[in-house]
Length: 145
Image 1 (cartoon, one colour):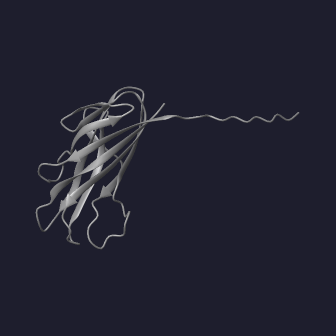
Image 2 (tube, one colour; image 1 turned 45 degrees about the horizontal axis):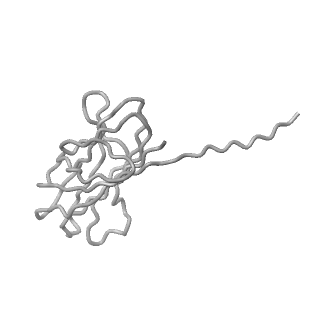
């Protein structure tokens, strides 16, 4: 006996957009996140986003006013699930002159939690011959429903 089963699981997403800023660039500095908008808006405080239980994908695109090819500014999402923050996802790197378009210029992370969790975006690595300044940027948070 043979059974044919067509199982289709539809997944819906809610999305939230926000802006990024940085007062002074330094290693481990936390990006400020503000102006959240979308069909869900998590709580934010001092650059920390509190995500309710669920499944998420986080994207970050910071923009920096610096353009020498020797500069390295890397950023990464961090999650606090056990009392201290740990890196999650794929590290991004601010694009500089000579980089290929799309060459690691986004930090990505997926979060799948059964309880609330705090996340933040930090400067992971900073090597610069000048003084980088913030030119804003944006985040996108996708929430699976």
